[in-house]
Length: 148
Image 1 (cartoon, rainbow, N blue to C red):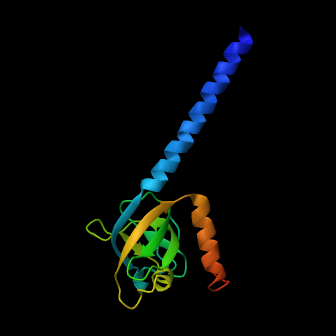
Image 2: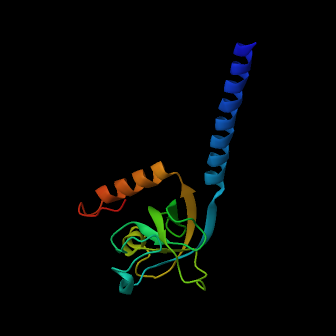
Image 3: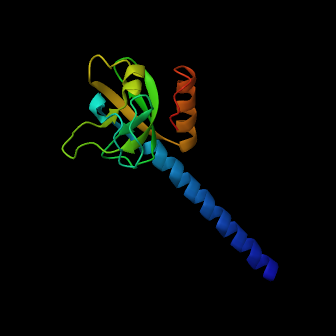
């Protein structure tokens, strides 16, 4: 009888973890938003962000009023298909209606730095995908950037 109860408990715990993992995957997969992206003005360089980091336009970071701080996102410029991974580390002004405000390095990667604004798709990704995406981007830019 005791072995049977143990087996049932193990199955219940395993199902619980499986259900949690599936809900997390569903949540990540459904967090996709379309909107307008802009990029930070140079005047913010060296200032503290909402999570306490010092802002640097050469790091793959961004500000959002709708996404949790620390979230990794994949941003796609819908006009040209260019993509960029960034980490949300700041908030925008409360009255800002844009979806995301990117560091200059990300706006350049998305090829809209000269235009100032771009239509984008913002997709929440796992921490692992976000970190790997940023590391890949760093390999294709200056080796002195350290943006995780």
